[in-house]
Length: 81
Length: 81
Image (tube, rainbow over all chains, first blue to last red; front, side):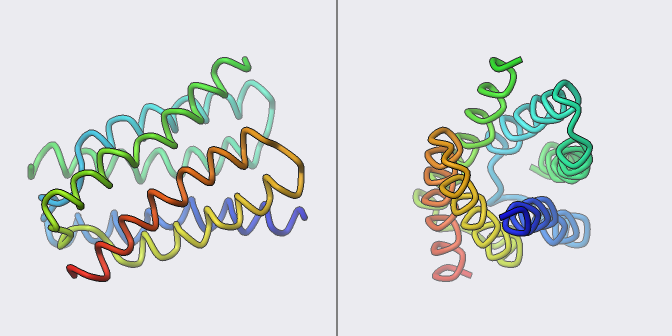
């Protein structure tokens, strides 16, 4: 069961890597939703706070990585439209 | 603390709604990463299984909603390129 949880965490966290690479490389973000990444970044910030509050190292680390990736994508969207 | 967790869950789950609406409306998915949504959909499927296994109704429901939204975006990406 723990393996399923770890697989889930690793896959959802690192799924944002190819999207971040794509927007950095192409500077093309027209079909990406500004609303999605605004709300998502806020949500992940809350997950990070929650992870810290419950003292979960895994949760804190996973959400820290996701937050950095989400900010890269959000920043590119704001910059390139 | 529970409120932070709930806020985080609601925000990250529903952040995918504007992206799903955007791809349905515009049929434009060129800057969306196929890799991201392929890996993310798989990851959310594992979170759904994990939620069911640990018997968490909130986790199961949140991941079910996210899975449906992720599949809508992934399907549009595969169809429109």
